[in-house]
Image (tube, rainbow, N blue to C red):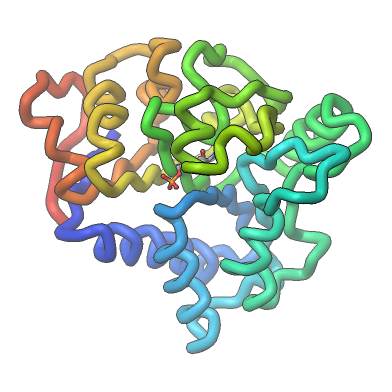
Length: 254
Ligand code: GLP
């Protein structure tokens, strides 16, 4: 695992957007794994700009989002589908049938999860998977306790996740989500995880303390992967120096 400490959250986002842009330039029909969360908003802002200025086309690409809330029978919440439309999809030339995300309103979320995993199987491997991280160390919605070989499935969201994602409205938030599993995620050829801000410090410190998969830190599923870059800003990286860093690889500044 290679750790890069960016000078600022903006520099970190720029690095991730450039990696995606280069991937599309080098392989226009790339399969990309996309993430959501506030951390990703500046990444999508730069990707919109890179598209507008003609630096890349998404016409031949295919994208898979990591997760979606289960909103069956409920209309009041914003889906991750909507986030993606607003942040990226309606601004670029990606054909709608090449944008994949579990259906938040599926009649049977269980069948929807199985169908999503089957679709991933059909198109794997993902060339470049982008990840954020939860304050409790989750990746996608694989909460602590998730199995290393887990596949796309329905999960119950941790209280910490509901508070992190919904703040004051957490009590009215969806309790379940469909998420790609840890085992689904690590099949990607290359993974870039972006973490910014002081709230991610503990999750990052914990991830880097593990030299093997530890279920209390779901992101530690990445330690066995041969091609992972961790992009941090100084606040998210602040806890690292205080702990022994047992990951193979190097730390550098971007
Ligand atoms: C959600 C997503 C994760 C994401 C996390 C971080 O929980 N399921 O994939 O990493 O949010 O969110 P934020 O970037 O807003 O801190």
